[in-house]
Length: 98
Image (tube, rainbow, N blue to C red; front, side, top):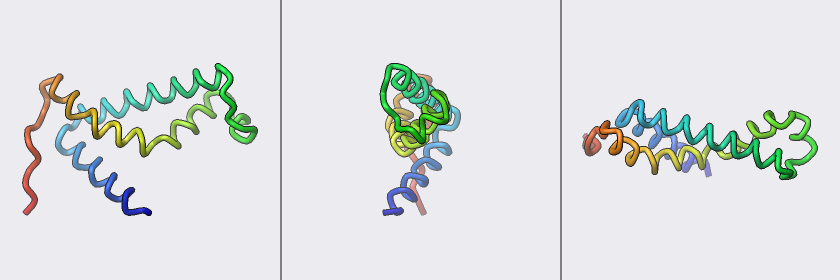
């Protein structure tokens, strides 16, 4: 089960090497959107359970955001090439492995 996590980490490292700031910026934007979306959902009445609710609204939103981290990284890997192309920072095709 942990193989997918190791594979995701490897892909993330490759995206950082290839796209640099575009990958990091994309991740930060997705993180912020997820955090704000979670916060708004909790404020709108989504039940997060009593143990998480003790953290307060922002703490519960952060906990929900951390739980979604694998999905955020996957979304970043999908969206980053598009963002890099739009920004003109696409590094071209990945280097061939020896």
